[in-house]
Image (cartoon, rainbow, N blue to C red):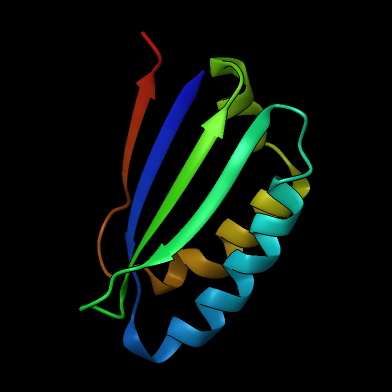
Length: 94
C-alpha cells in the first residue's frame, strides 16, 4: 500500500474553479482499480492551501494515475493557478 500526500497552494481568485476541477478529477480517480481512496481537503485557516491524500494499491498505480486522461485534463487546467511548486510525498506501508 502506498500513500501520496500532495500539498498545493492556489491563487486566491482561482480557488472555486480549482475545487470544482479537483472534485471532478477525484470522482474519476476513485474509479481507478489501483486507487483505494482519493481524499481532497482545504486548509481550515488558509483557503488557498489544499491537500490531496491518495491511497494506492501499488507503486505502479501511482504512476498509472498520472497517465490517465482525467489527470492530464486536471493538471493542464490547474497548473497555471499554482502559487508555488507542488509538494508531493510518497509513503509505503511497513
